[in-house]
Image (cartoon, rainbow over all chains, first blue to last red; front, side):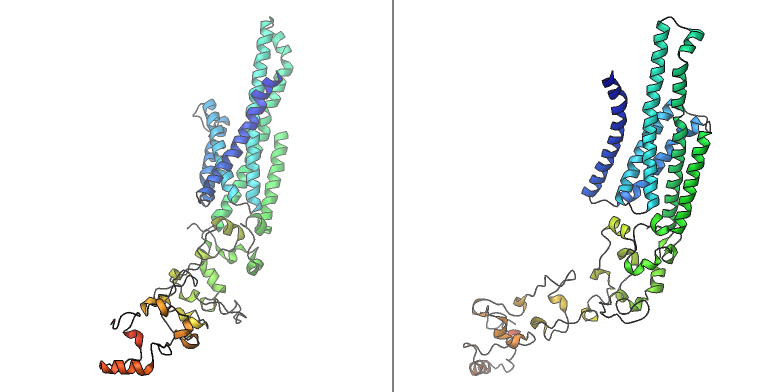
Length: 192
Length: 230
């Protein structure tokens, strides 16, 4: 059982983070190998566009847009945010100089960690709730008796869902820091 | 309620960071420290940058007068050890093509253009002595022009002088320079003082052939074998 939990929840979580770090290192190494380190300077642009695009799911979730299947948008949100984070990490790996840019990257990484935590924690809580309900039903419980027995599990699941309370402000902090960095770049960089 | 507090705390932190950006732009947004000579401009970004256009060469030149670069300080005082003043002769004046103020940018870009003679205005590219004083070494004594005869535009070292264009050094003529260039003065040479080239013998032989101008031997004799090459 413990091994199951490890392989189903913990390992995928750390693996997702490790793959992101390894991919960033690999792309950075390839750029160095190809003597094209300067490319990293511009990878921040597609990275931010991907991350920005991934917010389509958040807009759908908050009913700011109507179209799109939430489940599909969630998959897209995860993939686009992961790919965008990868590009931003490579971009950041090229030059760490200003504190603001450091903070934006740190906020992005916290955001990725938070996203992955939510992904695996919610998944686990939802499955646990389902398994408990099915077991109780097998035991012949239904209606108010079932609800009473599942009261604490339901409360726990609702508490886990509150994770979004944390994820959203972290995402907001990242968005603001990234925006400040982008404004500073536009203000001072010579695009030629 | 919790969400509201978290949002308030994050908003306050972001506001504080925003204030820090204005108070300490050198640490918050600057891509690395400035060079020592520009350190006093560290918090005055717009001393060098134009909004939305990056560092401006007009702003560079406002302090670094083109005519003074390599010769005088930005305050007009003569440099204690003047450098080669070539900036005045550049074909185009794009400061940022070669220079960067921030150390971080230098690390990213790495291969900024370093000086190349190709950057000079073609009209002055061959006028070496405009920037370079002739070396006081023996092979250069008396040389006044046409440096490209031996030197390329990529570096002083790697000079190649084809002595064979003037006289082929082979056999007994493969001798130390001072044998012909007395006192290592390469602006002059003599074929005399050698047992085979006695002045009286040479004079008599040439006059017998009706040749009266025979002091510049290498004008006709480009090697030890030919009697008459030109």
